[in-house]
Length: 250
Image (cartoon, rainbow, N blue to C red; front, side, top):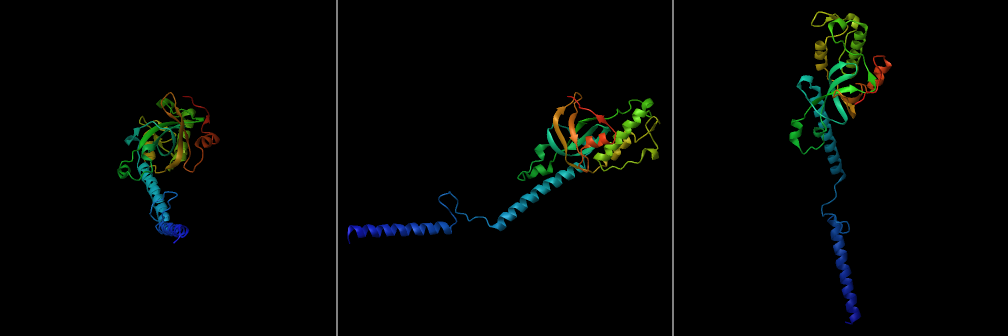
């Protein structure tokens, strides 16, 4: 055998070995050029199942937050410092522009399903909010003021705010027979009776609270809120005449 024939035979043998190696790599699902593992690619069924499990995980988190917020009551909650957009529940209404809401802080709204204990320890806090862009009449400070015109407007604004932010239904003022602790007739429910109704509220405002302006001089968060049906709360209160336009300062 000549040298040329020998070289040709060796070259053919090398080509054969390379072809066998390529076939083996293809069969094993591995590509040397991209450094992929020898594990076969996920089937469409496997990918679909993984997506469904992820969506179910997110849905379970949302349901957990929903249940936790529904049971929130003003007196049971701590206060916290927050910033951003939140899902919340109104737990107290002071007047036509000041409310307390219950929220789940962002540290417990995470979608990390690896932390199973986190679901059992969902924390809810309350914060006091001054609604931006509006100013409502002040609530009466004494029994003597309880039935003057300004106080009647203040009660009307507070009642309308309760109706817009909760699932509470309030009777018309003309049909109410309510008095405060001193026996003075009121154009609305007393603070105590109103709080009992708000405590029964089960309405959740999904992404209905926006905090990005800090706090005012009284420590209240300057907040934008949306009603239970998704409308801008400030615009509704202005349009219905329960408040005047106002820009709160820090």
